[in-house]
Length: 553
Ligand code: UDP
Image 1 (spheres, rainbow, N blue to C red):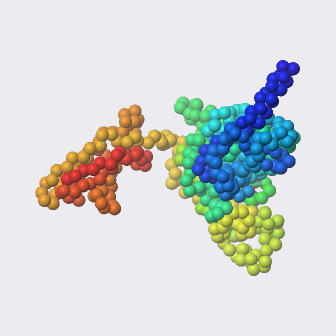
Image 2: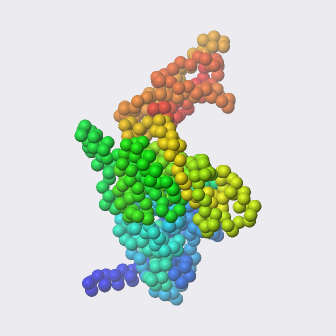
């Protein structure tokens, strides 16, 4: 043990000397504060001032060096929510010489990821804003491995889902509050600050009404790999994979059939389904399946995920618990219920998730259209949808309205009033929506998941031209198949050819099954045409265009 101590002693002096001589090093990715993640050596945190500190010396590095643009508005977003003004990161600067006059720093030896959780009380936010982004930020920087230290700087307590954050690494995450226990000055030997936004699919309506992000960059594949990693950490045997193993034999198929079940995710405090028992009976009867209920109030999170990971259908009121649909097996259905006056098309975090390419989930929404089937709660506190505090006219307007108009986050009283209603689900209309949904979407469990391999460029594109008469000409375009096609089994291979007369703004597009074609319509003699060719697999997987051809008739 004495050896360990002396080792630590030596490390301490090496570290202190390095900090004093070299100061802080920072190198970042990203052009803007909204897409930036920074890597630091010797980033320090002063718990008294509640500020991070960058120490300048002759050999410190600061890239990007933004000057005072660092404050316009910040160096980076500390949470995955874009450009939220409560989530900005910056540091103070000091000369390394000031260390002489400061408390002795405590060094954190672990590679550390520093971030803000956005709303750790809400399960949807936990997954979408924190867990998925942190998981893939850790994949992006390989030294953020299984033993990385996470530091949450938003300033909240652990919250109800802290066990989920613990799954990200073998080391206990630290909260801002706990940093002062390490002393007045704490220096992270190696750290990353910020979160990747690559996996987020939803914007919550801070600047425009909520909806899917404009440029979604994640597919179901990455969401499912994250889900699988989390399930492994929770020691959950994946019900969907067990099924698949037995699926090829008759006996196996029998078993799969018998094991099909529906999960109703119930909420017990707000936004209730008032006739849950009736709903469950109707589902069991209609689908001839077992129906299981789960709720966050009654089961542990892992036991809920165990159940959901084998379900054929997940039925729930709109709400954060629906984020658990990311643990459903491929081919399952997500059925989301909406209270009276709430338009399902305007609140789509779970629809967007289910519809990510490769997620392979069926999404169906049902909406209560019968006002007599809703129970409102005007006298509750405003954050649970109460409207007692409002002016009489405003109250009356809200009570008369049958549709919440589009609005911004987060305190719109009409939205809160409607979304916190309890609902008596009208069984005939509910079953009708379900059966409609099933008709339009064939069972994915049977069809093979669609390939996502895109064609390469077509090779050796060429054109030949002939002039027939003074106003007739021919243009023959030919090419070779993309290089990767010879290794693939593709159901349908087509080619798209665009022909544009030089100097014109428009072009003629053609879809062709073969790899050469002679065009004669609309082809004029003594004219230059620009020709682009690309390959298309299965109608919608587009390849890149080959270099443009210049063809003179
Ligand atoms: N919650 C729950 N049961 C309830 C009400 C809420 O488990 O009866 C959970 C919900 O899943 C979420 C958190 O409590 O994780 C906050 O719920 P809230 O209604 O504020 O948010 P929403 O579900 O609308 O996102």
